[in-house]
Length: 285
Image (cartoon, rainbow, N blue to C red; front, side, top):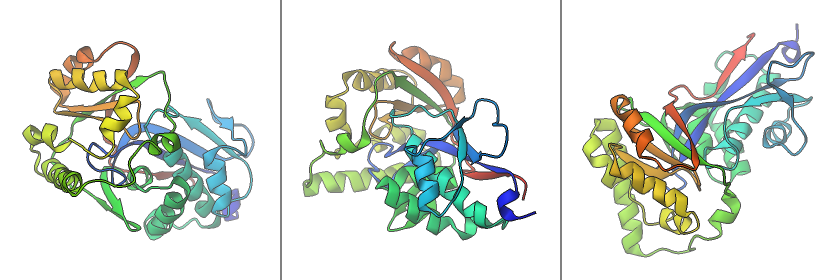
């Protein structure tokens, strides 16, 4: 049986990027999934054949894949939970898997997958987290997975409105003051250290930002309210997920229901975990 005839699927987690001060650098994989595979006979339940405009199929073709793809998706689109990043990671992996059945494909090709998907996405934070899982820092073609001393719950508040990441980025300043740059470097570093140490008391301060969040929240008052509501309750911290409008809050499992109750109406609430595995190739090897 040829490599092309082997049935497989690729499952990729959603992501929450920036996490406050880590603009275009920090990302967190979440337990919502995008799954795709090669069309070969009947489709899996809930799957649909992708059109030529879908980011997963475009990434698949860009990486040298051939044929049609099916997909099923749990990630809200245009809401700041890394849908396009997950789709592109899945498409690139499917193209590489079509050519090779190596059991270590994802580890061997990790930098290549990151490079291709970063080129397609325009920034590495979402794709890096979706690719390797956990909480990641990414820059200059490299990704590092942070050690975590916490196993928190992530409560996401997802409004019906959508945000275009491309349009949202045009509202951001081309230059920033030295003071604001130092503020964000310090707080991003503090955030990584707090997560590694399990220092929940520091997380609220560590997720403060001066580069992107306030500008984006100016155009999304309900998201600003959701962050304030989460921080008025037992959440350790809260941030605008990606370019929004989704808001993510981190808390202990014991406080999940209290955090949910603190959030405003007008948004769908999902209680998630941090996905620690990242993208996976499922099926025949």
